[in-house]
Structures are given as C-alpha cells and as structure tokens.
Image (tube, rainbow, N blue to C red):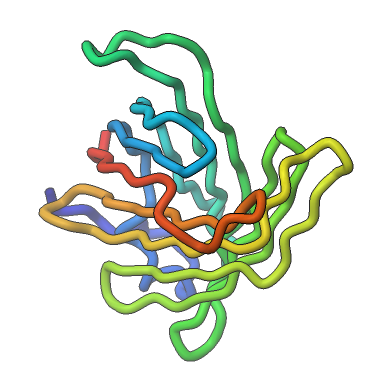
Length: 164
C-alpha cells in the first residue's frame, strides 16, 4: 500500500515517513520462562512538525480463535533521527522500566539495540534488547529479541501490522 509523506513532516523524518500512521495486526510471543502466546496490537507513529516521532503501542492477549482475553503490554516513546541515518528510541513501560535504544534506518528498515535499560525495584530484570522494523509488501513487520531473567538475547516477540 503506498503512503504519502505528510507536507508538515520535519525534513529529518523523511527517511521514517513509511512508519507514520496507525497500524493494527497480530503477533506471537515465546520465551523460555513463559508459555507461547498470541496477541493483537495497535501501533501509532505520530508527528507534530518537530524532529521526532511519537510512538505508542498497546497489545492484548488473544485465544486460538482471535478472541480478546485481556490487555497485555503497553509502551510509549520517541523515535529521534540523528545524522548519518542513525536514530535513537526512548521507551517507557508501565511494568517499571525505561529503555534507550540506538540504531539506524536503511530504506524501509530500522534496526535498534539497547544501550540503557533502567528498572524499578519491582520490574523484571531485562538486560538487553534488539528490535527490527521493516515495511514488507506494505505491512509493518517487526521483531523483538530480549535478554531477561538470566536468559541470553533471543527471539521473544514478532508481529505483522496493516496500515489503517
């Protein structure tokens, strides 16, 4: 599905214009310390003319038929372009941790890794992450690898979202 570059998009965000908008779809999760699960997801990448994108994601667990079971993860933050196709992502989660990510954009693909993960006393221990976002056949595909609770960095979440 083609997209239009908003006329009021900050020039620094043009390489990220393919992200702008509302997305909805589904995904799956797996990790050694939990049971495999499926989820629905809504994501928004919004701008207000300044040189950053506001990111918001909410998910909900679904059963095998796609029926909603209960709310799941929330995260919000800011994607900030940097010179030489580099970028920063700052995220906060209601489960008690915040992250700083660094990465790069290459056409319709963004790769990011964590630099800092700060957590409250009650949050689970997450020590590293890697994210990949890509535009494939007009859909937003993404994957998240995580190191947490003594486990090494490995696949945790992945999804496919359709532009709304």
